Length: 282
Image (spheres, rainbow, N blue to C red):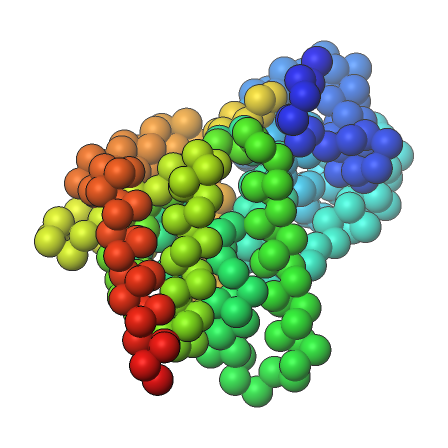
């Protein structure tokens, strides 16, 4: 039973939760374990568990196979397209939806302030850089989607968010010194309120375990953990236990190379003050 503050999908309002519950019911009616059904679909048992928990979408090609294997008379084929609609890009949609119900999120972002803690002005500058010919309405929609993700932190305790930012995220001037001062002060305020854990991986750390790019780890109350790896306009979720364990070790090595939370907060606030002074002089 969910405790106060948990953000589990509400079956009365979440189409994906309803479909996941139906999948679990249909699988058990056939006498199949998650692993056995996964073998028939050439996916892992963990993947089946995540679909049942509503943390992963049921893709069209899998929906049709489920109907055939479980004898559900087209239920999944008919209902999954509507449940899969998302305001996020395809490569990130599943990760964003999983993030919304995660109990713990651990994220390494080498170049940018992580999306969950971005300010509106910082996010707007990023989206304008990504899409220089987009209309203002399109940029507004993208910013609104990013801020909606950040509202996860309105809950005072869940999810646990632990971020490691590369020092480049502090030094790369996005939108000018005023935007950067505001953005870094926002991160510092969250850390001061003990709402997030923040570390900075300094340039002086040299080579580290995640030079290949960003990494996000998500753990759930009732589904196996996931790792999300993101590239330029691409991303993939990993659910294989051995793969997730390897990425977990990568995150731990990065965290071990980073400044302590106290040292990181001092650096973030110092850099924010430098930007504020620069903004006042301009």
